[in-house]
Image 1 (cartoon, rainbow, N blue to C red):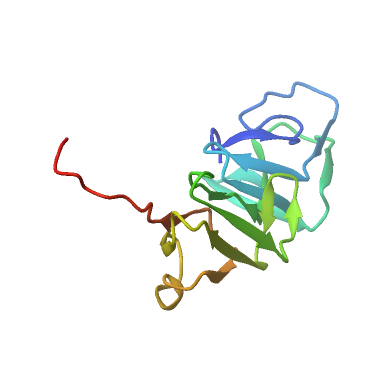
Image 2: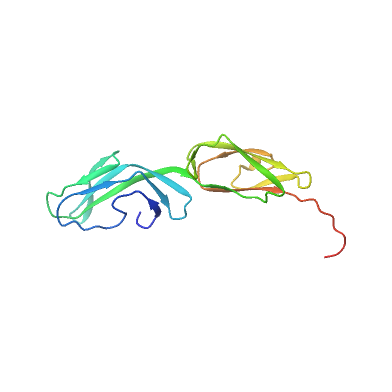
Length: 171
C-alpha cells in the first residue's frame, strides 16, 4: 500500500520505520487513494514478524489502533486492512442547456457511500431537449431522463442535451 494513498489519518504514515527501543502507537480510520476518487475505511490490522525468510502472521484484529512494544530484536510489519467506504461520482454538463437533480444520496463529505444508490433526473430546457446519458450508466437506462446510480466504483456521468440550431448554409 506504500504510495497508494494521497491523504489519510494513518499514524505513523505508510512506509518503513525503524524502532530502536520503546513503543509505537499506531492508528488509522480512513485513507483516500492517490487519484482522490475512493475513500477507504480501516477494518483493523494484521501484525507480522519476519522469521525463517518469510513474513508470518502474529496477530490480527478489527481494532483501529495498535501499540507495539518490542520484546526482542527482529523485523516486524503492521498492515492496515482497508476497504472502500465511498466513491466520487462526477456529474458534469453545461448548465445553460439543462439541469440535473440528485435525490436519495448518502454522502460522507465529498464521497458517495459505497453500496448505496441514488437517483439522477435530467431536466431539459425548451431549447435543448434531453437525449441520453453517457458514462457509467446502466445500458437499459441511458435514454431515461431519471436513472438510478449504484455506488460501486468511481464514476463520471454526463447528461447529453441537444441544443436546437438551424444551419443557414454558412460557416
